[in-house]
Amino acid sequence: MPGERGRRNTLERVLRIDQATYDALVEHAKREHPVEACGMVVGPIGSDQPVRHVEMVNAAGSPTFYEYDSSDLFQLYKEMDDRDEEPVVIYHSHTATEAYPSVTDINLASEPGAHYVLVSTREHGNNPGPVEFRSYRIIDGVVTEEEVTIVDTVTPAEESS
Image (cartoon, rainbow, N blue to C red):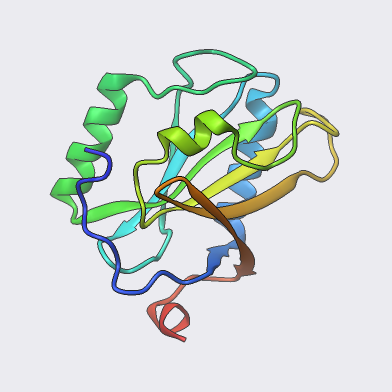
């Protein structure tokens, strides 16, 4: 479950994400507005490669809080174990505030190796228009913003540079 996986040897201060995955996260956030959207992008253990997007249901159904359905979360971690994957990106949306982790977000951050992405839909909701898309590392309650680089395809060579 969360927090049980080992830390990567070095934590980069940049999230490299492909355009299709970026678009999928933004589309999910806009589609769910005004309820917070949530999910993960998982990848091979230790790779820091976000390759498989998994939308989750916000069991709280709230515009100010997200909560994974416990059985869905258990199933996802079982799948990741079977496929030698781990959470690379843990994301959710903020519907009325900026894309910065709340105190609750910080307290619930249990994957020190993950990139925590926030997508703010406060400006345009589910209508056309830009969103605020930001990524953070959250380790032991310390929030560090990191650069987001959108690439055509995430490859192992990009991840090691």
